[in-house]
Length: 237
Image (cartoon, rainbow, N blue to C red):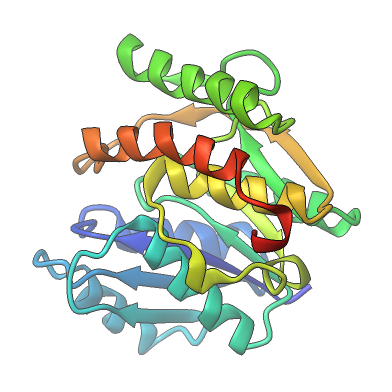
């Protein structure tokens, strides 16, 4: 399948060149789309420099920081317009290992609509996270499963691959969540539309450089979002 990885960025100059090169090396013929929210540290300028030598690198530059969810949706729309058949997402900070991409893409080839790089499908596979952050993430997945009935161990993970035909069934203009909430919402909508979902075990390693974008508003958004999803009629998802 014609495959691309969407990577949202904001102030990722320390990681961007290395993560792009690692992705391009991990999977033959794969493309990379960077969605940058006008990073003041020059992230998009570095991407533009790399694009001069590599046609598989794509860039969307947005006017300001608008959030993770809208960045992914902008990226997904671009990928669908360009005719990509498999659309993956991952972070720029190496917390997701590009070497795991071939496994996720292969699983998608096995007639799944969504493949999740899961931290919790085979125990707890998280390295270097503070205990508080781990409890928050793991607890959020349990909370989501209880409220929504979603049959996924890692509901908040951001390392995944979608089949384009499934993404086309989701109204991306109606996605307004970010962070944890965005990941939960996309998983839930795929599930409610009858999509086949598989979790592939990965090891998650906390970012090696840069600053986490997690904040309290992201957490509260996810808490209330799951109830909204639970009581939204299926035809409106």
